[in-house]
Image 1 (cartoon, helix red, strand yellow):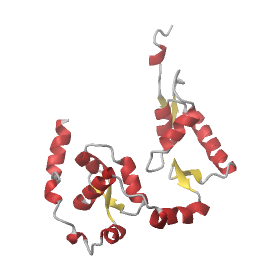
Image 2: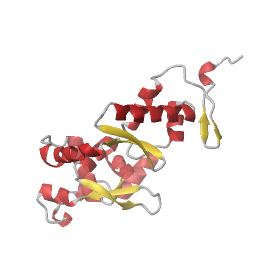
Image 3: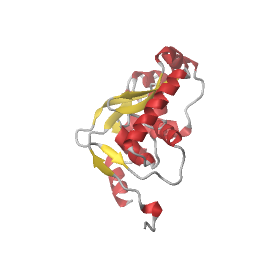
Length: 206
């Protein structure tokens, strides 16, 4: 007899399939998948999702396919698509012009203090990875980086040759918004930010 039912979760990889015991508590599978997919920055494969929500891969795949079909039937403003071997939410193509208008022209809200700090780190440390920005600010910056990307202030500029991490830099739109001709016109604030070595030392000490 299993005396520890909450510890009986088992996973085994058989042909790329994750098999697990169904959790005794927690949100419904559909809600759990939606919550995870709302915060991802790139497509997430079914194996990873199955591990996160602790359900069999086949069950997760079936639920994802039903979710995608449901969003299409309900004529939502977004789709759930399977691309590049994973799943992610995307704005519907027929809504793209409206979203672009909102982001580029119609959005009046100012950037938050957190967004401005994150933008400053990218501006002075570029090209810089998301993890390096997070290390400098000592907080998670995923949401803020998505905002900056959406507003066209930062963009992907390459990848780190050692880690493969995506590197980010500022855009021409960033220069336009600040009235700058080039990055050389940025005020000399860089000395107030920690050096790359200091960041690494801090990360290793924590």
